[in-house]
Length: 152
Image 1 (cartoon, one colour):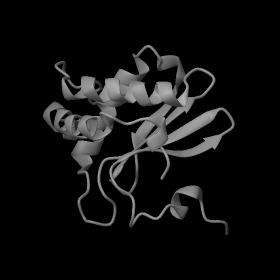
Image 2 (spheres, helix red, strand yellow):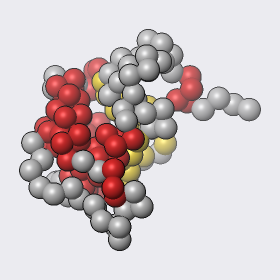
Image 3 (cartoon, helix red, strand yellow):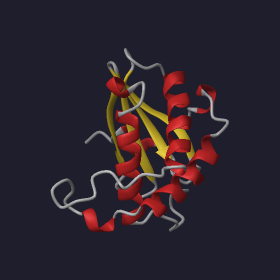
Image 4 (cartoon, helix red, strand yellow):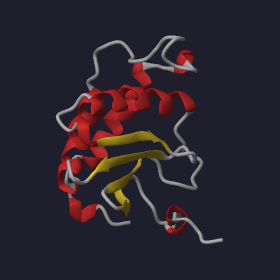
């Protein structure tokens, strides 16, 4: 079988940051790497789930919400994928949007979105403080990110 694109990235050399993972027609996938792979330093389930709820909510309610296709965690627990429609949001626009959104996530002052049994299948492990801490760390990592830095 052919190896999928994400398995062709040398994870031993990968560092936290924002990367262009792939382009599939008009759909662009960014790899938002929070942790250095293969170090044992992983996001906990509660951190991943909490960041997902806040950032997905902020992205879909942003000025570019109509371009958002998906935001969700990587199975390896080192980051997230962000998929967007390149007809509605450029790559440079996506970089700037993510900087804004993660800064907003670090300053999030509302109740956790979707934290009820009716809205989420595992609502009990959602924690605003955990999400804010991870968003603040990632916001600092990508603060000066540009499209030139998107290459693995």
